[in-house]
Image (cartoon, rainbow, N blue to C red; front, side, top):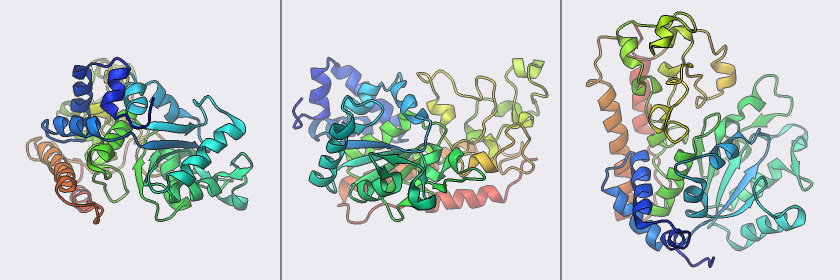
Length: 375
């Protein structure tokens, strides 16, 4: 298909109806915590703007984030990648291999400097000059330094690309680190999780296509729309927590009735992610709904700091039973939605010479949470 085609034109060629296209735009607006009216704004942008070029780099990883993307039923992989971007390089799924694959990557880096997008999956080893992960004879470290430095924006998907993840957990013989440490100063959006949720990745790409900028980020460069709320406040089991109804043993009556998993080691009270609302498998479920506690996989260094996974949190930040949802839950939801909408609107009405860095609302919320203790 010609590079000049817009996302909407390509959707039409592939047989997607206007209705399905608008449904996709509505899903993205909701995921981005934007008002429903922004679905039309997104549709207008995807109807006129050309597909950006994307390269996907894999290093020290299990390919779980790639698998998560490929197995996403809604938005489908076609919606996320084929209709939203021009995926020029991805070792796992591209048809080319060897010198032909590497030539495709080099073409993008040289001919589209400052225009292409990069997704990085996996940790980057730094010990012994990075020899523990090489592609085509080059170290992962040298590849990310070249490819990410010349990109318009970079998305780090999964825990390993964010902060080293499992590969970095002690004793870390390869000196694995996340992308930000490997390439300091890179313009990055972090999408931690083990694995990442492809709906969030699609939302970041759509935001970039719509507004020409990355979404509002927190202090750790995670998008506020996905990481701006505590899982505990979004959980369908929260009412049981407030009422003091806890699972005491796996398979007991409380477990069968869907009671709170806090005493079974659930880390939801100190984890930020939108798992309870976006969910997995066509939005049908997520770990806590299916009966397993949250392990805070989107939290910094969670393999080291949140384990053992089945041990109860000693003094988690959160809110006691005397605080109502109207006082806390909806306030947080409204604050995140407002911050995201203001950020997006600002990019519509002003130029992009002042990149958005909206970490303060997140810092304020974090400070408030630290002063409150679960009772």
